[in-house]
Image 1 (spheres, rainbow, N blue to C red):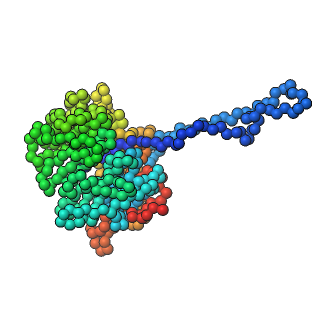
Image 2 (cartoon, one colour; image 1 turned 180 degrees about the vertical axis):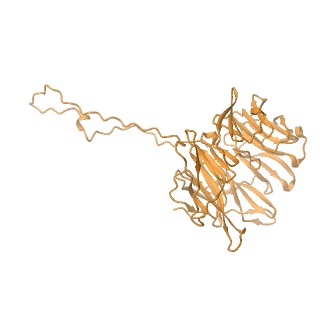
Image 3 (tube, one colour; image 1 turned 90 degrees about the horizontal axis):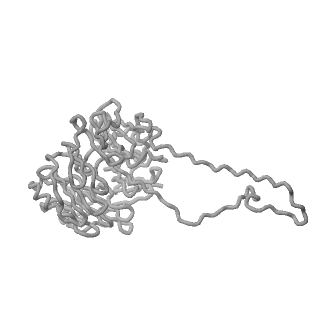
Length: 460
């Protein structure tokens, strides 16, 4: 839980679980090999008198009752090392029920789709360069996978250049990555979302040509929603205009939280270019949208929470007027807040205490509330998780085999019930020097990893 305005994402990731289905067909009935008489009528010899007593029937086997699987957090979880070594900018993305890991290692960018055991199901290398007019940029960093899997996967990629970087967008076509060339190279793709059916929407900026942030449709129709009315309502300078969060609706509508002379809420009905704009409050540093597919729900700011229903805003006062340390969506879309060691949830009757967190070092984040499997990360880098009986358990990390060091936790992704990924880092120190060395990366997961791999190592 927590709000990251730079990436417009919260550290909690809600996974949409999808299941596979086998091919259809009519059921077949197998003959009973152990008891042939159970599947055939009895044979009577010619000339023999029929028996006056019926033959006893064989007892029918009792069908086996499949035990119900235990809840995913019935037992204390274990984080197993999956990847380690020279992993530059190690990150996790979820798309279409799949988990992807990306990192820079072995002289190229790696994007790997993970299997159910935490191994590699599919690999996608990225070795593209970017021509920016005055030269070709060869170094790049993957920021994440976006769009729809498997039909519309898009890759956000950073190309560093002197004191600036170019953020480009690539799509997977015929097994290779192709740059989306609808806009000039100087345009940066800040974020990308699947919008209405078949449509991919992007938020783009162009600092090189002093162009304000705007929406652009990079695949499909129609044109992107306009932010001009939001700018006029806020009356702010270009450098104070910031799109904090965006929520595409399933029906083609859109909601955006914008900072411009205060916190503004912009909503577009399906097919509209210009939005309806309402002022929410002061120019808060943080803000996030907690909305459902219909665009209804809650909006969280530093100054408080607002309920958004049918075009009307209703302030939601915090318990006792206290400060909100963290805000996020619960399993049913309702707000959950943390105030110190107390977690509360919003109900029809107001705030109700949901859980009391164990005492210890300052809490830096609570994760997994939206899927019902809470995890904690504290200021001393310790981790803990709550089992279904309400008990909290410490979760330790194993040392990496290369340097025998326990990494420092960085980002915890609870992508589904009992399905957790943790990116972390550690350092290989130079000989004779105390604070000079190479940063290394490690990835842990609750999936049953067979054996950890070194970054850049080709999976068998």
